[in-house]
Image (cartoon, rainbow, N blue to C red; front, top):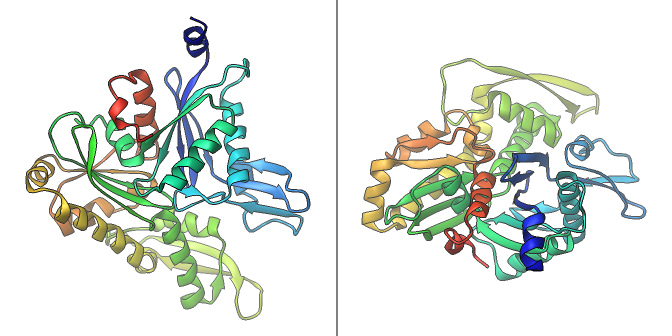
Length: 340
């Protein structure tokens, strides 16, 4: 009786623990947190100075005594202690009031996660204050969040492009029939833009500037518009400030390699999926989710290469965490989608 009462009074949350951003969802309020997965530390004693949006502003701007880091790399935990601090901060920010009542947490993870990485995520969640941690693969979360018929014997193809990984999976009967986790995604595009600016314009720019350029004029194919963006950075030759006006064509060329790697992963998934499921995918199309889905023209490029209709979720940034949250509403129905 006490266990049931405890479970009723405590809050259950879903968390998309991403390389670039962490999102938290509750059944009552929906998406209640969406912040960068960045932590600023005092390099002298390891003390946490800022987390999330505030810490991201520190990237590339910190004095020697402060270091801003991303504790997740390629969708998995790279720094265990800092990840604990970050999750704890976010959970406390979301769950105010009765701190003794620990929440049940569903965390989204890449399909290619190893057993050791799974254990690290679960342990991190428990140490951060959760009473129970369940894991859901990101493409499964995206499929549920987009209300795809995952429980039916129908092939559902999901492409979830995050910051550190691109997850491609074919789902049928509440299980993953084929999956591939490609560790090329939004962050790789940012790095490609930084390299291009250095090589072609002799200008050094930070990660935040590269992301702004990508979001403003980044395209997967020519969109017909002549968009430009003023990029400000540091002159490689003399160290002085330097600004350059770049075109969308230049940025498209800069990110061509990571974009092609993502398209290749989609083509490979279709090639390796059983024929009956491919026929289903051909009829209903594939789902594009995650922040990378917002890259202009990516849906058109994928259609051009694989001849399958591409549907972008209404809010691709939150599709995965919404799906994980939906599983909390009926855990018995969705018991098969948990991977631990």
